[in-house]
Image (cartoon, rainbow, N blue to C red):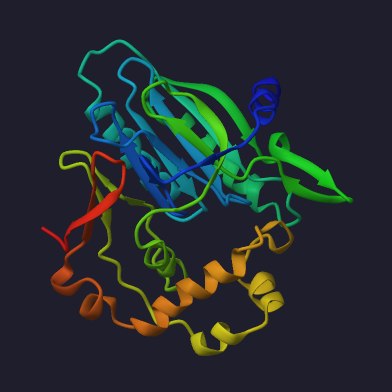
Length: 285
């Protein structure tokens, strides 16, 4: 496993442009097939203690990707695997190939706990799972000036070829601030964001609790945001504080999202056009 991890780490990270990209945020998952419309790449990043789980059916090419942070992990992965099996034709030849990326040797052992939870859960399933690469925790750790860091923060998957490579993303898709805001408002589900029947990116509906002192956090010094709103302050990317503030502004502006964002419980839906751009099609079905 270490050899496969080192092989993945040796690949130069690519900057992925938004065209044709389905970006999976923290506490989300998505499953895509080679007949999914115009989605060409599925990926995720900003994984410090989080883990990115990729499961691909070798026969059909149906691919699931989840960004796990320890919330709703088992139920979410079970739903993802069920959808992969559903989209893969019954009786088709192939197996489920699994790749894990993320985590490092953090002092609180948050990464290690998540690694053990995911691996332990998958071992309980009656599925034909084959572990291809585990670039996680110990195998995804590098020392910089005596401090542990992840080697790989993000990965992308080519939907057609199945190629997996380290990646950074220029744009993370529609309404990323809303998709992140729910993390600070107590929404704990690992949610499916892609409707394979209609080829829609589905956002919400979310409900959340108001965050104590959200107005204070919006003007708090960067050092406070990094220290108290991250599981790994030293390892977060430079844009971490801006991303957090953008998400908190959503909480402050929409304390009751079912009344102002997701009226009548309707999700926000986007469809990728032929140019690979997400276009809003409706506020719900």
